[in-house]
Structures are given as C-alpha cells and as structure tokens.
Image (cartoon, rainbow over all chains, first blue to last red):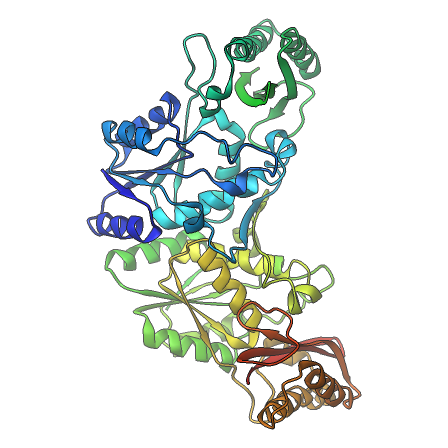
Length: 281
Length: 281
C-alpha cells in the first residue's frame, strides 16, 4: 500500500494505473476509521480494481466553533487498518496541500443542502462539496463510496455530480451500528460512559418511528412529536433537529407516502451525533 | 466535423478519441463567431490532436436585465466557419440539456471575481465558472483556450482550475481587433454606425494610457483621470468602470510597478463593451 501525502504523488500513481485501463474506486474519509468506513472499503474493494482511500480532516466543512482542532486523528492506526483491508493507496494530504494561500473557489449546492445539517451548520456542505470536487479531480475515480449515516451528504454529492456532469458513480452504503444500536462515528470517542449510554435513545427513537409507521401512522407531525418525546425522556439528550423530509429533494412533508427520510441530530454534552432511517409508507 | 447536441453524444465521441490516446482541446464560446474566436481555434488546432468547440449562450452568466434573449445566434454560419477551420466536433446543447429542472450546483470563485465586471454584473462569474466546470467535466480537455478580451474571466478560470485541481491547461490568446482598433465582440453587431464610430474611443484611451506609462506616469489615479477624460470627450460613451488593478490578484493599486491590468467597460446606447490592456511599468 502506498501512502501519498502530496497531490503530485497520488496523481502520478493514478496516471500509471489509468494507463493500464484499470478502474479506480475512491473512499473519501476524515480518518479515525471504524467499521463503518471499513464497510465502504469492502464494497469498493469488491467493485474496483484499484482502491484509493483519502484521509483528510477537511477544515472548510467545520464551522468556526466546531471541533476541527479536536477531531480525532490517528494516521498510523488508520494506515494499518487500510493495508489489512487490501487498499492500494492512501491519500493523506496536509491542509496546506489542499488549501494553499489564495485559495478561493467553492462548490455550492443549494436546495438539498439547506435544511437539516445544512441549517444547523452553515457552510458545512459547501466545504463538503468543495473538498469532494477536489478529490474527484485529483483521483478521477470511476466510483466513489459514501456512508448512509451522512444521508444528506450523499444527496448533496449526487446532486453535485449530476449538475456538474462529473464522471463518477456515487455508491452509498448502509449505516454500521454497534451491537446495542449506536451508529458508528469517529465522534463517539468524545462520549463519556453516561453519554454513550444515553445516546442509545437515538436508535431507540428511530425504531419507535419504524414501528409507528408499520402500525399505520402517516402524519409526520405526530411522528415527530412521539420521537421528540422519546428523546427528551433522556435527560442528557439535547435535540438539534428531528425532521421527516421527502426523498430525494428533502422537501417538508405533512403526510408520509412512499419513501421519506427521518433524520435527527442530538447533542450529548459537547458531542453532536446524527442518525437517520428511511421510512417507507 | 460532428455536431453534437447532447452531452451523451459528445461524451461518446470523446471516449472514443481518448481510447486512442489523443489530446483534446476545447474552445468554449457563446457562438456568433468572429475572428477573435477563430484565433483561439487556430491556436487550439496547432496544439491538440482533437479539437472541440462548444457553442452555448449560457443563461446563468446573464443578469435578469441583460441581453440573454437577444444575444446574437447563428449556429449554421458558426458551424460552417468551424468546419472550414478544421474543428473535429461542435458541442451545441440546448439550455435544458445543460440546466435540467432541479439544477442547483454552482462554482463560486471569490476574490478575483468580485471587482470590475464581477461588481457590475453580480452572479456573472458564478455562471461562467459553473458552465466552464460543466464543459470541462463533459469534454475532459487537456487544454482549453480563452480570449484575453475577457481578461478577468481568464483569471477567474485559472484560479478555479488551480483551486479545484482540474486537470486542464488554460491557454489565453491575445485580443483580435478591427483595423481601426475596435476589439472584436459578438456584441458589436448591436452598435449603430454612430455608436460603432464612438466606440473607437476605447482603443484610443488604452493607447493613451500606454503612452502615458511610457512617458513615466506611475500614479494610477492620474492615469484613470486622463482615461476618463478621454472617454467622456465622446458624447455617446457612458462609463461603467475604468480600473487599474494588480496582476494576477486584481487588487487596488496606487502606484504602477510591474504588470497591471487596465480594464474598462463602457456603454454605447444599450451596448456594453469591454476592453483592456496590460500596462508594464
């Protein structure tokens, strides 16, 4: 496995494998890898001849008061996991390599990026779309793999790829959960044991919603009320948002019909966690 | 010469020539071609094995009160000129092919796009950067050719290519002028004979500036005053801006030293013309 720190290094590697006509897969990550990332890697390994994983804690997708500085990093451990998973190359640039002085171009996706996490984290999806555009232009993958835990991110990237005519297929992969239901996230390491235990309310409330829909509930306001009641029953939980939105446009929705996204963001202490499930009416 | 109206057609053509390992050049235009465009085509023909010219009057780079509807169009004449110039393919999509319903992704270049035409035409360079990104992703050229008449546009596109790591070399080609000095522009057809004659003041004022700099003038305010005086001596001229800016960042500049851009935009009746020259102190 090659570890590339510069754009020039990864480009010359990609040029060489492209010349052999091989298909290239990219798994963009911010590192501090868990089984969720590794499920993306497995899917990519299965589908592509050459597999690149990027590890880059992208400053432009963090707000000024968010956790960019403290976001967990462990490149050595990540590289070990990826070598074991059959990855061909890791692209792990420094921030100054991706954003040199004078940098001033951004990709903005409106519409689908404006609600949910886009409303709570202004500029977040602009940072995501920009860095993903850069990674696509650097690696020129045939396929790129993203986790459904960031469901809105997947929608934003699919929209961008379609609108800007990027030649890459976006493949989204299901959420991986701990045995007790907590969705895997690099940010889970922030949680105290009490917060970790309180955070199980997220999965519990998603399951409650699935049960209610199965029993025939179609009114999204009543569904949201029940979910909010469930989450607020947990004293350590502080709700950022609980929303039910249409797919794929994320419009507001009074009545469930067809597929819809139930998405939530909740703080436990200083840690903001997200989770979601697709409801089918 | 192939005429492609859809993204799929031009893509399959490009895939075929890419498979043969040929280099591809792109000349993006809005059509209604003149000798300025043809000088881009000649330069591209000289440098690339396969030459694509796009003809697309891009709605997103026009403001709501600008001349999108009336912008001159003549695809048949353009196609004849390009076939004669040895072009391999023309990509001439309809607006709905490039911007289908739901389109919502844009490329924004700040800094260099905010002054001059960016200040007079809000959103203009966002539209330019977006459509050029799309064209680059569709055609995947090795080189793309732009005219120096839109000097700021060249700087915006170079900035975007560098920031977003696009694999394309941007080549800019000198302004082509009529014998009497008027810079070629598709918009020149809007001019009445009186306006056409009045518009010569643009080239005259650029030459005046060059003379003044040659005689040792370095104070940009005094230079601008002299140019404004020259232009306003022409009763049909209505100044939008006259500016002297640093290169390549287009910062304000009190004193000339090294290379700087003198750029101007002036209305003659309903027609807004731009012109520029690089000053060297």
